[in-house]
Image (cartoon, rainbow, N blue to C red; front, side, top):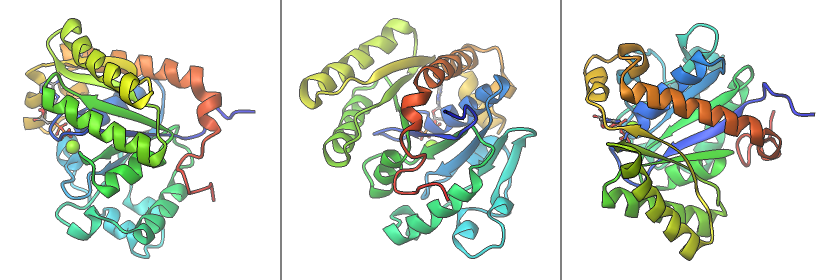
Length: 271
Ligand SMILES: Nc1ncnc2c1ncn2[C@@H]1O[C@H](COP(=O)(O)OP(=O)(O)O)[C@@H](O)[C@H]1O
Ligand SMILES: [Mg+2]
């Protein structure tokens, strides 16, 4: 029997930085919330955390406090939307968190497991690239969304990350989102190239989930420190993200049984 309310975990990752992961992560959580799905959004860009700035909140506790022996891990969680969208802030500028050793990851994820009850999604906003923390997080979650842009460097870096995850961590399933495309055709070209390379050289078939239009309202929302879906809910990029959330919800529903067979966080069985 599958519990439809059980948490599913999703990493949002990219080969290259600055492709729009953090904006996608937080706005996707808003879109999922608006469509009735609860989530806990965790800032996992441990060196350069910035979700708090994008959300316009100033948390007084963060992951560093979670790693210390605080009484209740729930004290670190910030409520973004009452009734089902919460945020777990990271600490910025703490070098020892960036390349976390396995013992530290162990402590952190045991605490996260204690927090998961009641959320249908755990969304991890990762730092870019092939660093050990990003790879560990990306291979731990049940699902992965890789964000690419039409820039050739984004494609090569994404491919490199998928290759390491596939050949060294046995991770072969990727949901691809193309960001900053001017239209559908411009979004499909990078996907087709990535898809071709993955099929030919890695024997894996990434899945195209959708695309988000290049839209000046996104940097505008960042400047206002207001999430795009609240700042400009009917701009093109917002509508794309709302649509992406719908596609994701269908994917989640159709694959829930198979996905639920994997642990929410690999190597961290439910406590
Ligand atoms: N769809 C988009 N259209 C226009 N600008 C975007 C879009 N998505 C992201 N950006 C801009 O790209 C920059 C990087 O976004 P961010 O979410 O911080 O990327 P990452 O987390 O991958 O480093 C931000 O300045 C943001 O305003
Ligand atoms: Mg980011």
